[in-house]
Length: 321
Image 1 (cartoon, rainbow, N blue to C red):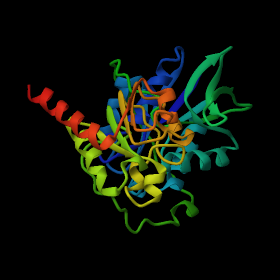
Image 2 (cartoon, one colour):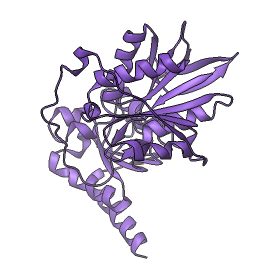
Image 3 (tube, helix red, strand yellow):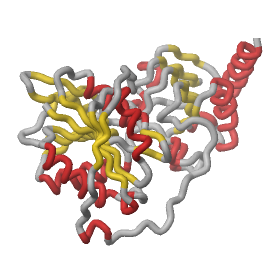
């Protein structure tokens, strides 16, 4: 079985999600596994993929791929898949990856399964798992033809470096006229400090239970003390208290940190979807009947305005000691 993994990069680094998907594919056993890196000035950043299981990395280094636009990348991917005969193409969830995966499925007349959380082989065929019924059950999904395209939920897999080197294979770009019709005029980057909620080992999230937007300072201070990132709920974002980039949940981002601390969050199913993969979940809420306590590893019933500052100080004391 030949599997190709789209390796997305930001700046000079391959993204954690892509490397996680690559590691998962490498764990499947007897597969011919390759990665693909598309961009401008990207040849040097492709090599680390070998440490995560890729035997080859196809590299298309072209100025037309400098802007993160999907269609030129679809042109290159379609050629690689056809010429090399790949049976499956795997993507880690992102806005760009979702655009590319859907367009590639249309281009190749291939099936695309999305929002996947696991992948395995049964009777020689790929079988994936996908949440259903608001993430209350998991179902097995497959494909009726080839190539099989798969888009995995953010945080589904952690990268696992096992060593090794990858052969770099240069790919000559060839673009359709319509693929070059769009031009990116400007790319805005939101200013932020500290790790992102998707990459951090610790996420401290705040909800409407904080009472006011200025109370998010409590969450920020605890996150800073723990070396983590700040998350939020949809209600908080909709109210304009905190930016959308921090939203955790069904309509936000999916996170899977080692520690997730929910402050003043009731725990609606939409929020649970985005953080239930966390290793340890701690909830602080004054309502003892809040749904979040049903799936927390540790629950604290009390006022977040009193508990969080004390917890922050204890963390700081422990670190100073």
